[in-house]
Image 1 (spheres, rainbow, N blue to C red):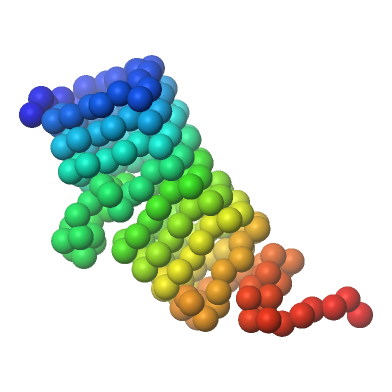
Image 2: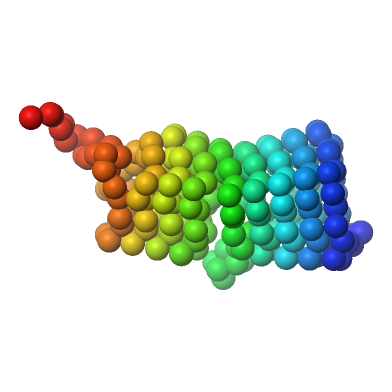
Length: 197
């Protein structure tokens, strides 16, 4: 396995390529564009991605731990494919955080995402399944087509989020905060009809 430690990669552009057996530790990726890459047996640890675009990657035998994303466009990323079940159960995450990122059509499965701050992110079309999202912040997020299934959303903050629509019965939502008029969407999942006076 070829190793890169503490290196900076600027404005790399790769599309439709296969990348295998590489280790990146504490590296900085800035202004890079990676589209439909096939990554095999690669590891990313403590890396930082700034102003990068990553679209529809395919992962096989890859691991990512504690990476940070700032002003990135991340589309079609299956985050659950970046950690094995044992590491997820131990509370590890592929990411430390997202700041000013777009996370469209991403998959979050079986993660402990307590108190993770997604504020202002575009999460359209993303999928959260069987996650602990206690105290997670979705304030100001765009959630059109985002699916929430069997999650613990206790004390989560959806104030200012738009276009969300998910089952109150299929998720635990005690103490979660919502704002009008978007919160009315949640009532329709219960078959309740609301009419103007």
